[in-house]
Structure formats: C-alpha cells, structure tokens
Length: 318
Image (tube, rainbow, N blue to C red; front, side, top):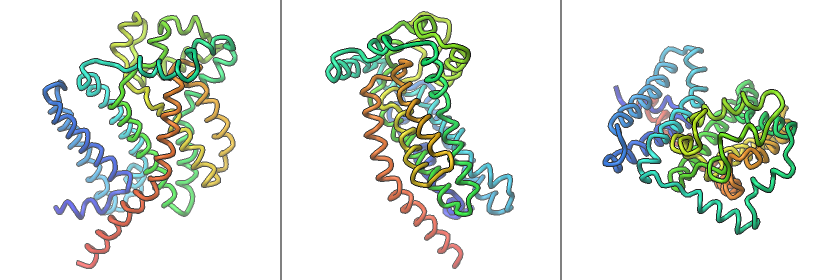
C-alpha cells in the first residue's frame, strides 16, 4: 500500500496532527534518558498516526457516512490525547523545575501587585459562579462554531476552522514545553482552600472538579502534593488564546451565536485570572499567540491543502 496514496485522503488537520505526533516522538527520542517509557509513547504516537491514515483511506474507499463523520470530528479527542502526552514529558525534561517565579515577577512588575490577590476585593459567590460557568463552557464554544460550519454547504470553512483550532492548540503546547508552570492557585494561594476562599452558589464545586480532572489535578490532597501531580499548562494561557481565536472566527464567519460566543468568551478570559488558573502575563502571552495563529493559519492551510490537491491530481492521472 503506497503511503502517499493514503495521505491524499487526509484532511489538513490530520496532516498537522501527524506532524505534531512526529515532533513529540522526536522529543521523546532526544530526551529518552529522562522520559520514562519514552519508547511506549513513540509506539502509541505511530499507532494513532497510522489509525488516522487508515481512517482516511477507509472513508474514501467505502464512502461510509459514519466514517466520514468520524474523520471530520476525531480531532477533538486526538488533540486532547496529545495534551495528556505532555503530562508525561514536560516534568522529566525540565527535571521537575517550574517557572512560576518568573511569571509572578512579571505580573508584579506590570501591576505592582499579585492580580489574583487584588481580585479577592471584588469576589462574591454569584460572580464566582458566573465566571466558573463561563470558564467551563470553553469546549462548548468550539462545538457551536464547528456544528454550524459543518452544516453549511461550504465544507472548506469547516476544515479551515478545525485546522486553525488544532494549529492554535499546538502553538500553546510549545509554550508549555518551553516554560512549564502550575499557576497561582497553587503558588500564590492554597489550592485546598479554594472552595472556602472563592465559594460559588450551586455548580461551582462540580465544574471545578470537571476542570481539575481534565488537568490531572489531584483532589483532596495537600497543596504540595497537588502541585506535584498537576499538568504544566499555564504559559501561554491556551484558554485565552483559543477563546480569542474563536471570537475572531465567529465574527469573521458570521456565526449565528457569535455575540453569545463573544460575551461568554470575554467572561471566560476574565475567569482565567479571577479563578486563579492563570497569571495576567499568561493572558498577554495567549493574546500574542492568537495573533500569530490567525495570521499564519491561512497560509499554512492553503499550503497543506494545495499539496494534498496536487498529490490527488497526480495519482488520479496515473
């Protein structure tokens, strides 16, 4: 089976995902002397990449609508899978060193205070509830835009949207590799006291549990144990970066719920600091990364789709 013929059946998002798997595998190989089970992660990366290629080939060979839907939407769990792989790589690579002190110093230089401490002056249970709900709606915003674009006749917009989101997440992951940190809820505050210091009304404890579970945060343990177990995903703020990307794309593509996305996204960005997930400098880094993403994604997307189209026409002529 010719591998080039298989790759013709891939979407642009598939291509960048496979490329990122190759990058992760290379990093595992370079730091094999530090990363436990590096060989297993390389094998898993290769297996998932092969599965993506097989899915594209099967979809185009059989014409199955079920396989078509799976290929169009598999990027969501696949990108989350790559995020979880970072959990097993970043700490060993940096020998357990975090850079929160740099980010704290940057915030203090910019504002003269720790913003999360200052925000305690305006905290209230209802404000906490609203902002925690907004923060947890992060993934719903992707779904709202994706579903509307998927139902339109022009599927190219949907594939561009998926490519841009995948590309944006990978940009933020490079930041996590470069400057691992855990965030102010662990460093400037006692994580175990969060529900007592910032209580919500009804849903806040459950939504916090959901967010913490996704970030591999141990629950019901002392602060130092929680720090040791949590994911390093603070700088840049991926929530800020990708929310700004979503707001931009929803306005650009005139999504019906674009104003809901804009308002919810604005509250979400506020929540990243209020809920102590991020330092303000993380948000600034996320905003810069958003600009890089939206400026370069169209160029990369066109390059990727042009290459796939060229390969497809070449093989059709054979």
